[in-house]
Length: 192
Ligand SMILES: [Zn+2]
Ligand SMILES: [Zn+2]
Image (cartoon, rainbow, N blue to C red; front, side, top):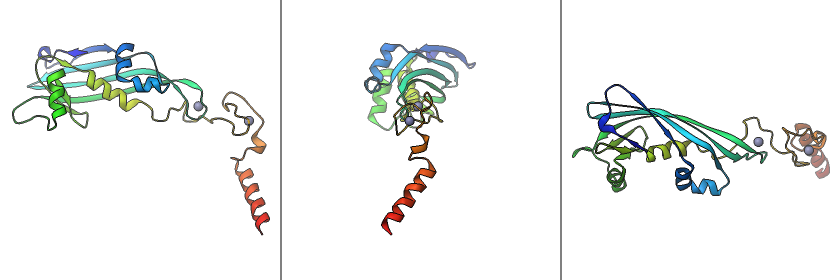
């Protein structure tokens, strides 16, 4: 996914990129293997302009995953959404990435990202945005997928999904404060 930096003006211009399943499969194969699948095709809206020698890039990312909730085990649609903003400097003799990987990325794709994802370098008239998109997406991948903050998970007694089934296990639910108190009292009485 390329951006012709040589054609940028000092007024921001909008660009649209769509993440294909193919591209996703290459970069996020591990995620796919773990059962988190891409749902649809994520999209990047990018605005870019050049001021002097610097290139200013900002935009938004939106997409969906199909993941399994860590609490109730239900598969659900997980929304990915983030915005980004960075400034790229041209590769110069005095200013350049310190690590060899950075120089390699510059040679290969025309762009090298700084560690903070807010700065970077570019060289040549055209850069590849793939590394940027990968980073933005990676930051949004949930470490612990949850179908909702309020997800009540599974009933520890009968194993049913609490948000979907109204089981009547409340009375013997060990997580209830009364049950915990009762069992504590029972233990104390037993040990005395
Ligand atoms: Zn859940
Ligand atoms: Zn139950």
